[in-house]
Length: 265
Image (tube, rainbow, N blue to C red; front, side):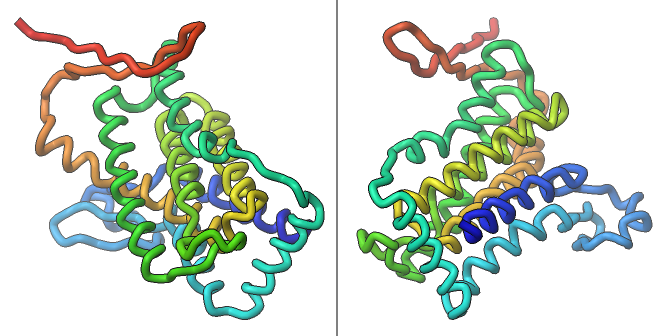
């Protein structure tokens, strides 16, 4: 199972890259001289966008596209599929359909029990929604343009893995919100996301490069959402109080989401 070990190692790199300082940093013009050693895009009369933290997600995406045409990487795809089927010929689970959302759900769960994250309910919900829109803009057109057949032959929309994209976006969401509390929150999220990607392979729904590219798209989408949102907040929510809170709840017969509204006099 050398190919599976390689995949897990690649996914582990994504968490290491995420731990570099923060996601995508915005630095003021007064810091420009200090930023010259970094790989950055300079914006005249504006902030500096540091690109260091997105190098690994970009590398994952590049690997995914390269493997579409590279014969050696295609052999890795096929050998991994054969290894999995030989070792687990009857394996199937629907857990990956739910696991992909687990890190994001944990953000709301932790807040519900009093462990506060970086943002309030409104801000984190908008950030997560924005990330979902960005990832959809990446993934859906790519699936239609590449038309890669799934390993099990069930369709021609294999590249990239949407489940893995969602899972790694959720993991980065959890890391961003709780890294200031403890890095273990993010570690747990990335382990869960990696498990989702592996289950997509074990369910014979995706190739290795599908999952790797999906991880890259997911991380990048969430990083972009955190970078874009401050500008949205300044424009639409400046000095406005939080009037709505969305909280998950659990009862003996089920669970769901509850909305709490605050009405000002």
